[in-house]
Length: 348
Image (cartoon, rainbow, N blue to C red):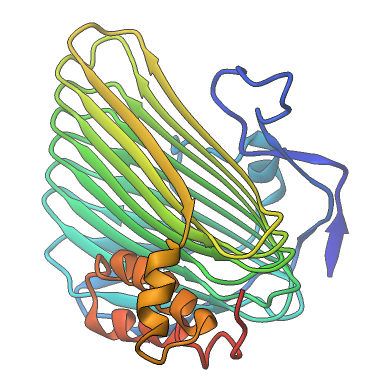
């Protein structure tokens, strides 16, 4: 069962700066499923505690308020109070489903969690995280939902003193996908690192909004996105580093690397650094390009077709993101999902 929604605004920039280009937010016209998805728990160490229908308050969203108002169903909380080994959860969104996952790392705990998104249907996933002082949360999300489905992912985290949030995210499915990631670095010396990889195939679209708020002193954020845009695809990446008054000594960096395969792609990269503090450092950069003809010629001289050469380079870009996945089993799975066989033999 689903509920029809009006035109929902998603992924808003914290400050409206792109009015004339209509890039301040995304618009989603569709359905938010009211059926909730229970994950298949593929691996769960004894040291982790599962709590049904308990949520975390005061974790901000980068997707916008409207989505949170619509997601009020069942949820699962995973809690760690020690140095845990990885947990693996698989969500099947077949038929159209929503899911809510909450992660709580207590003081000095380690909480590594991998989430696999599968199925044929509209998929909406909310993940909210609380990292207490000295803790580390390693989150991996691999999205492989059907290529004709809508996908919305909303991830938010708050980090206390000396806490670390590390996110590795792969976008490998979905016809129209919206990704929101929010990190609040309120504790001194807390940090956020994101490695995001994507392959947007023919006629697909991807809209991403990463927002980092530095309020604690000597906090650090690093956002790196790398991906491939194929024929007639569309991608928007919003990356905001907000250096708020009081975050002296904070450093924020964002960078994106885009490879174009084919023609007629639409790419929008919006790096935004907001600064209300003097003793801070903010950096951003982006590169976009096509394969060098010399590379194609070199590989062709060794019997590799142009199509195969494109796949080799594309997979290498995603491999660089996959290398950041801490769990070996999940890394192996991710590698299997980007092989030519997994792509159905499709080339750009």
